[in-house]
Image 1: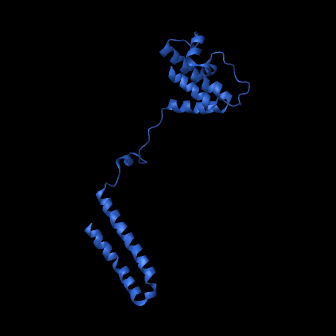
Image 2: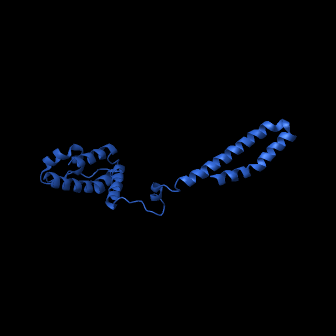
Image 3: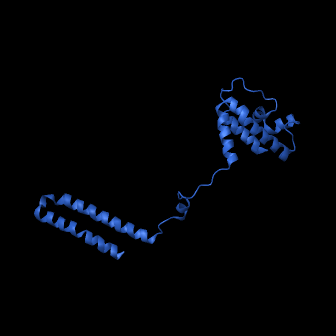
Length: 170
C-alpha cells in the first residue's frame, strides 16, 4: 500500500508544479485549474484504492469460475428437448398436434394410467376419462378424429398446460 501511495505522489508532482505555475503566472485562471487538479487527485486516490482492494480480495469468484466458456453447460435430455419441440409444433397447427404431439401424449398418458392407477386407456375409457379430465381426454382418446384443416391453429398454451397438469396429477 505504501508503494502505491509513493507512486501516486510521484505521479502528482508534475500536476502540482503545473498548478503552482498557474497560480503564479495566471492568477485569473486559478479556479478551473484547482478544479482540474482536484479531479486528478480523486482519480489517483481511486486508482490507489482499487489496487489495494485487488490485493486484498481474490482475483476470481468460485461461482464465476464455473461459468467459463471452456466448460459446457449441462444439456437437457434429448427426449425433453424433443417433447418441447413437439409441444411448440402442436401449439402451431392442428396437424402437428394430432399427428406428432398427440401420439407422444397418448403413450405417456397410457403408461401413467397403467402404472400408477391400474387403468387401461384402451379397455377402460370411462375410468381413463375420469382420471385424466375432459381437456386431456379430448386429446388422447382413441377415437379422436383427424383435423379437417391440418393448418388450423393447434392447441392453446392454456390447454396444453392443463394437459400437463392432469398428467402430473396421475
